Length: 445
Ligand code: PMP
Image 1 (cartoon, rainbow, N blue to C red):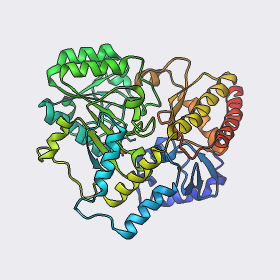
Image 2 (image 1 turned 120 degrees about the vertical axis):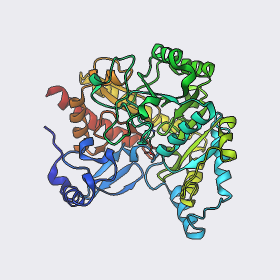
Image 3 (image 1 turned 180 degrees about the vertical axis):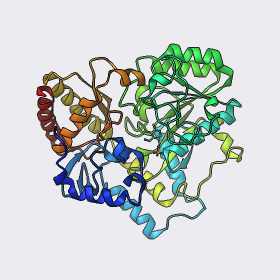
């Protein structure tokens, strides 16, 4: 049923076969792997331009994968590309000494985010989360971290837990126990983790009452983006903020996806919650590898005198800083997010309309330029709901149908559709036309 026309992607297929002899899985990141849904093989990209990508067989797609989020300005945004090229041609890349550009960038981040009084750069979201949890532990003198089932905070040993499909093996709904994401994690690490269902204030309250003075941090995405897209229920984050503040627990917002996407101030500005520490990556660099950890001055002060070391050969390298400076200038243009939201809303409401009219059990859930289609008759408020109620097979057919009509998003139901500033109303209309066809086919099958 609506398989990708393998003849039409035969060059990708051949490159994949060749690559997998050298590169485990044929790809360099899990989310591109066959077992992440890219069957019969991932598409190999020739190039991107604006809202589109072209594969090596010459197929052109409207791109809602957007590099899993960083390409908020679309592919090859002129200002960012130019800034990076200028920097590396005229100045260099890595010096192991600071440049004046770093404080310029820090000022932009601090101005954009009221919760961020001091900020340090690093290279990836994984690193930034690792530092955030370390700082929280150093600051509080406590060891336990609360994190939520189904979220992803990077692949470090300490947090690479409990996004596991085998929910029946992970204990009761309100008190899941940690399940490693895979082998190779040292036993014992999980003693410092408390896993909770998201959107469940009672579970959070119970955990804080039981373990309060041992909990260093609550680590959460402000919008759940790693089990599809799940919005916080009204009051949930407010309650989380109040409870953590009262218990002296550091509230860490992982805004790797939402940061610089939901607004210049991320999800926290849009939802009006002030975390203690925040982590940013993807959107910050407009496609170049850069991440940031920022927050309260008194917590970040641990880094001032080296009590907590934050290091890295490539931190704040010329490419990263030039890219982030140029990206933030683009994002700060008046009306940037109004325009991005308008195009994104057109897509979100449009898809909901198309799927509903076709009689399909679909909920298009999202906020701003971030969304996912859930095929379900029941609302999804956390990971176990998704495992129990979401129709993954229908999602797979939807994805394939859209791909065969030139619309690219990730095959995983637990990923997101991203919109960029390069997407036009015409892109959205073409996407909705494709969706109408696919919805009709799915409804009649
Ligand atoms: N946190 C969240 C919420 C993420 O979505 C991701 C990556 N998708 C990470 C952390 C890890 O970031 P990186 O891939 O840059 O290490």
